[in-house]
Length: 185
Image (cartoon, rainbow, N blue to C red):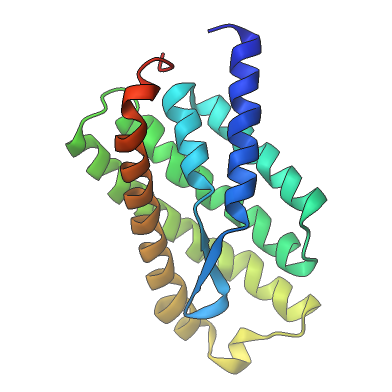
């Protein structure tokens, strides 16, 4: 594949991922939102490689920051979203990309979901909770308690998010598989 074609695919998938970020649905409380922008990132992994998936993630994130910035929500949420998405995609790059079987997809989905959940647990505890308490005067420790928040909300939400990501990508992948075969390396 030529560099021009690869760059074009990265640009198209980045734009698609950015657009998919607008279609979010909330779960539990308003700041727990799921968007399916990861589908375009996983398509970049399938069609191109892990570096391209990272590039799509970064471009869609810069677009989000520049064109749809929601202040503190974006400044706090976007970095942890980037890390969570890349952890999930990394599981697919290491487990499923080389041998695209259903069993390996399920293993990658489980590993990705658990990795995503662990990353979000750590990032919420070390990064998001302190920043929201400092800059938004929203101290979750006083409202729910940190342990209650992490174990009753963050973990279940991210487990569900990983399942939603995997199912959505699997359905899109099956639908697009005849077309993707032409582009895959």
